Amino acid sequence: MMHLILADAELEIVPQAIQGHPAVVKHAKSRKKRPSNLLLDATYHHQAIRSKYGAEAERRGRPDIVHFFLMNAQESILNREGKLRVYVHTRNNDVVFISPETRLPKSYPRFVGLMENLFHNGAVPNAEEPLLYLEKMSLKSLVDSIGKPAIVLSEKGARKNVWNYNIPEDITVIIGGFPSGDFLSNVSFADEIISIHDSTLMAWVAAYEIISRYESLYLR
Ligand SMILES: C[S@@+](CC[C@H](N)C(=O)[O-])C[C@H]1O[C@@H](n2cnc3c(N)ncnc32)[C@H](O)[C@@H]1O
Image (cartoon, rainbow, N blue to C red; front, side):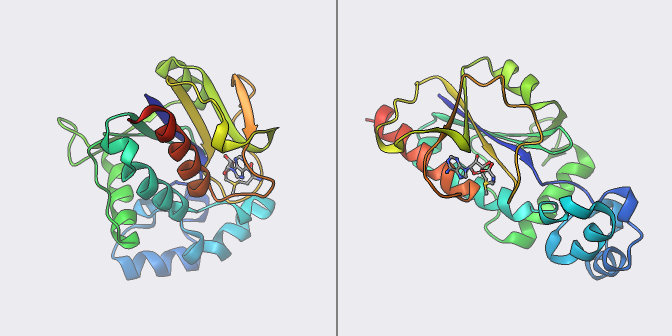
């Protein structure tokens, strides 16, 4: 089984400090929602983010990365064959647990609505039989609870050829869910930190490559 974690993902509700910013208020009105129920999205809230978060502004508010990542992972052959578990860990140590049979909306606005619902209610469609649910947990605690060796994918890691990399069958793989910069979480606990290309890849491409390699080794 491969456990795949998108870590330090830039997925969060609009922080209280910028809920009153005109760009956020305008967007909330157009969505007929309260700012406190809105997902932070750089496409709409970049000015608000810049007004408060300076150097961090370039990485915050990126639910689109989570959407692309989940489309790749959840729809993969590996998941259909029952050998993949997917988690999204956020910058605020919220962890989204996703059941393997979950089919997420292809439409980005619908995906955003689903995530807002999840942050508001803690589970969707309901707490009794959730397809997705939230728990407060650090990255390290999540990895410990899974209980498998962990590999971090990072452009700063030891360079490996992904096509002949011998990934163990029982493994947790960690990929950064942010557009630039480095992991916010301490990932030094990992058993290995590897780079799979000389360039910086998008998170969903890194996910796809490691899933494909795993499939080539363990799906018959
Ligand atoms: C857009 S990158 C984030 C940029 C960041 N400078 C970095 O690589 O840490 C998103 C994630 O994709 C993965 N990634 C990107 N390029 C990679 C590479 N060459 N080798 C391995 N993983 C990579 C890493 O997990 C990274 O955190």
